[in-house]
Image 1 (spheres, helix red, strand yellow):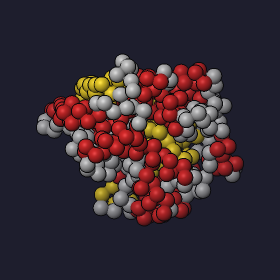
Image 2 (spheres, rainbow, N blue to C red; image 1 turned 120 degrees about the vertical axis):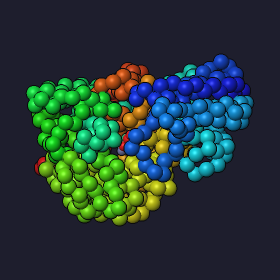
Image 3 (tube, rainbow, N blue to C red; image 1 turned 90 degrees about the vertical axis):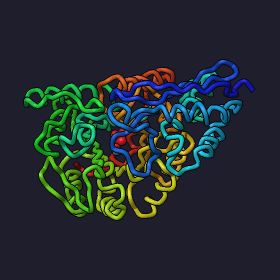
Image 4 (cartoon, rainbow, N blue to C red; image 1 turned 60 degrees about the horizontal axis):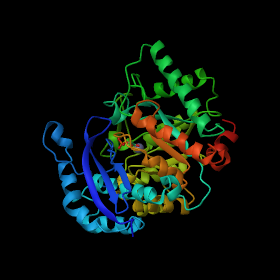
Length: 432
Ligand code: PGA
Ligand code: ZN
């Protein structure tokens, strides 16, 4: 009874790019309060839930006053009196109120903030951390961090074309060690950049600004940074790329401005597969345009079986799209960004669809973030084996990595999914 919602309070706060975003507090009859904030993407899939923005010029472009009004005038009256014990009921009410496939009336930003705030309110009401509330009594573990070292693409004025050059501590014993090794590589990468006269600040997610002459130069420097950190590339620390190819695709062609080349689909597939062959890369996200289903299937077919092929823009955290991609033979892992879906129920459905297919799932932040740490709780509570939250700098990123350490303490261990659980063990075993 006292888990019933008595108030839904929206407010505008500011995100990590200094732009407005939506925060929501849900107050229950027993006084429990849950709070969550919506993140914002910059390289968005065209089929994801839309951010409702006021539009206009200057800062108004990103204004969220219409989104806040929708929460006050439409969502709050409907949700008041509902119990947060019923997350799917709350999410169904949100879907019903909006009624559009991409949440364009109320806004995915409004809806995800409400949906996540309801989950937090339930956890507070039950006196449990959210990860525990979501884990259904399963034995939880920490996710393997995927951490950006260089940030390019839409996050760095397209200084290089590839969006994320990330490291994955495939050889780490546990979450704590994975972060420790990552910190060493981040430090070493900064030194490598400084010595080469290339240190020029950081991109949107805290990765170093990629002052490189080509996309491949970043791979070279990253391998050097791993070695300089005293780690073995491919053994201790591997590379993961988010190509975000939709950003530089037009009319069947891929224009790599940093390389001065324009490639066909087949040439793009060959280029990325050559990188996979030449560098210790274990995971590739969005290697082709989001609408190039055939290209993505061809890439997946030609890639080594051990390579993780992640769909972000193409799958937009949607269960039906995950299933469709599987039928076409595209991808073998899904990026789960709750705000692409718009509600927690739909985000979880995408993750469960992936699990049923034997795919892996990576819970992910956006390039525009806040101090909100909900995604870490989702990753642990839902048993996702990987977590992607940007780089190893800037507190909107560190808040999430650090929340994982607190959860590790609460669990009494920092155990990650077993190394043997990942396909890329096979890749290393194959004598790379
Ligand atoms: P976004 O990109 O948050 O800027 O949309 C992140 C990603 O492509 O993974
Ligand atoms: Zn992506």
